[in-house]
Length: 158
Image 1 (cartoon, rainbow, N blue to C red):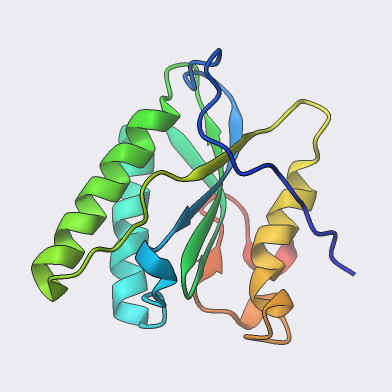
Image 2 (tube, one colour):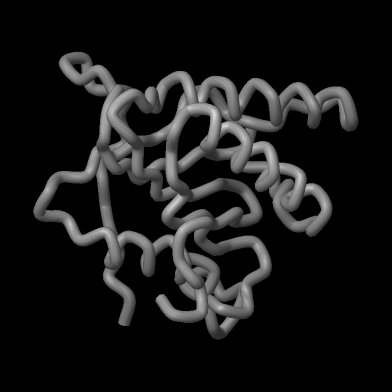
């Protein structure tokens, strides 16, 4: 049974810079919970933009999952990685492309973040992210879900 992780829904920590070699569990929701992430070509384009932004801002994408109405990410930064800048640019670029194509708003304002503590297990969080489609009843095995994975690890081995 997958452990369900619960974190408070709050804005950024006031006393934390979000710059450096930290790991983050991020959730970005679509505007009005619209289910935009069902089309392979669209999700592939978003994943490409996500990958480019991660490289530009020195983040490794340990796990990602495009659910129909939100995106989960497990990120690991380097000494000069800025989470705020990374998310801002990713959301701007992807929202602009979406608005140009559809005339609609893609993302809700802001996002949810959890800065991982040293004692937190990355594998538990990766499995939670990857098994999200199973919990939601979209697939029976997370390895069969087309819109999730890792840019660091082999999804089939997690």
